[in-house]
Length: 198
Image 1 (cartoon, rainbow, N blue to C red):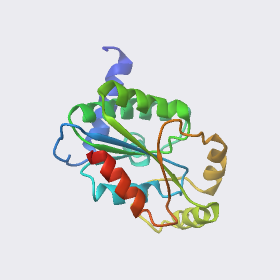
Image 2: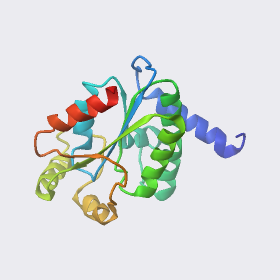
Image 3: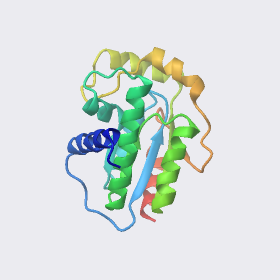
Image 4: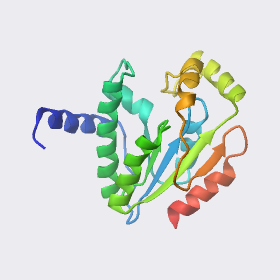
């Protein structure tokens, strides 16, 4: 630590932290739920339902990106800066005993590998959830999103982004839950909550 990049990283983490609001009570064994899936599959919907039952902080990559970059370009450099800060933030919060729900596309195993490493290093229970929905449902959702129907929606992704990202989806190599958000998500919510409290 100590270089220019480090002071940038520290300031980025601080900016992300400032936007998170109040933290729940720390626990001895925090849980780390990483939710992945393509745009429009219902990740944020699943996370908001989960946080109603699990005292945790949602780290939504789209919202956090806009905390660092008010007019995001989604360039590789921007994403790299965001995720460097996000990974350090995840580590800090877990060390403090704060349970987390990460809401990000996390499509490739290379990106998830970093999450595995953090959880393994801190000996934290990592619960992986793959969110999906039929393409026709996603298409309708993304069309509605473009119309700005939900002001709380922080994502800029549209159908073209969904189609561009689809080929980059890689199989999750670790045990994980799969949930189709066009159906009843309660059974998977129950399982995740149960595992987080175990």
